[in-house]
Length: 344
Image (cartoon, rainbow, N blue to C red; front, side):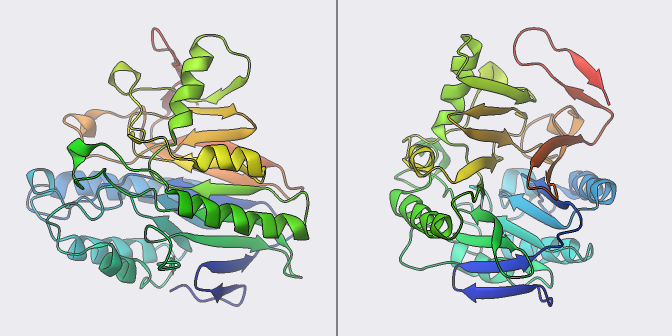
């Protein structure tokens, strides 16, 4: 677990991190690293690790937020089911940057037949020297539901960061049962905590980080395609075949409750490796992080437009800037129709 004078664990599901009032605070979102560390994945792992190193070096973040699928214990791709070993190597790799990193589970970190379940993997994820992670409350669904509150010197919460387990698959626990969602008790726990923070500061605004996109992301995209002015395009594109969104089979209530609650203004996810879209819908900015994955899809190691990180900057005055950090110098701005590339 990360240790520093400006950091502490307040309770079983809350951390606080004091930040400087004199400079911007930078969060680098990384997602879908899909590290295999097995018989079949050595070359592609090296591509992914090199990409992460380049992006961290370029952005120099104060905090790294990893939104799931850090490792990939899927034998046909990685050549191993040993997610324990994968996680150990991953943690050593992240610790070398000497930058605190917080994370959530994706749907692949603990695949069926992999060696460690979420409970055991959570212990490994929390063991890193610079890791910020906790299992969270055992009575709440999922593993790894917690708050990391950015505070000022007096302890006033400036920006709550909510990390949520968006879980894995449907009823039979396997890919073909569809994707799960953030469950209702998770949403209620989160909203109750946010209401408490709003009582302390009526103007508080929060960010949420999770793996699987909320169903409303697709809803908002389809409305935008039809010219609905309630949706604002911010950046990026949908690169998955047939404009695919890997949304839950059951919609869930998290987004609706967040709109009603009014504190969460930004949501960041991963999961769909070729999607980089960011848009604002019902007062919440929904953003796909640029992915790292070189292993998950056939041919993805040769793709490049979607690969990179997402830099989230909290300005001194409280404003938030979100920017794609492509690994290459070219990033697609296609939303529909023919691709149009923009040089950075």
